[in-house]
Length: 391
Image (cartoon, rainbow, N blue to C red; front, top):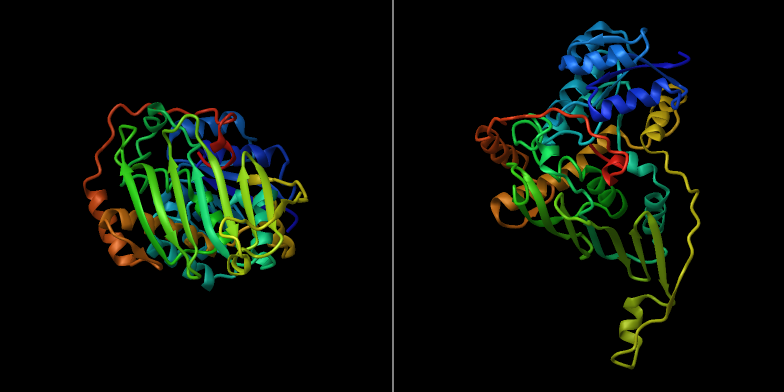
């Protein structure tokens, strides 16, 4: 096999972007073999914009059943991510899923079990893991050189969305169509990075406000408190209604502090561990000395193209993936914990009670209202923070 024949299931905002990257030659080891979408307007876009050699299907099942691809990329509404991944793997195809891995961990666990039985490659589209800033943060935290984590704070409110955005799709921002709001649509990458760099917390207390700032039934404003196994604490704050918003990720270690803001990473290192200084200092108001340290990174931030190149390289040559598909359950576990905590109005421990979560989710799905006056639109996301991460 010289090139991976890729089929893209779902050619909306994200799927069409992946198609363009491939036909423009940005992923040399891949060629676009097929696409599928339930909407005639999307299929018409494919006829007008993709090479004639690309087969067009009315749904993902037909694409997989045709066996015209070596691998599929799943970019459909969230509930169907696991179903199409499982079907692809069972039909001898490699699979990569857009975020999130699914809506609830019980569903994703079944997908991971199917992957374990398969000899095919399964990956997640966690493109923010390619960002040199986050990779450097992970390297520093995991080195252990600066002690354990004491505190984690992420204010990620740079997700501004208008009502027109939410009106643009019948499935969008509904419990039955999307399964959640800002946590499940905008924040999967942030939640993945948080657990990738800092590990999963063991306890979560969250306050998720549904339709606080928009006419939607899911959460658009979240504040969550986190506790980690070593005693560290954290806060995660997000919304789609702040203008201007903030994207500031802080990790305080015993001997250093990392701050990522506006795509820049600052690193402050203490001369001695704070824990040592606290009990050795003789003055009540003195502080440990330290200094800002300039960090060197490779500067690379290949985003979606980097993930697809790694996916193809793993299939063809056994090269490392950016994110194994099985890892998708971790960030979703954190998202599920936040939702469940808010629904129950109390702290919850991780791993979450998967049966209870699904019970509560299904209650919301049964009461989910059908959208009126849907105005389907494809938005230009080139100037939004979300263009780097989400739709």
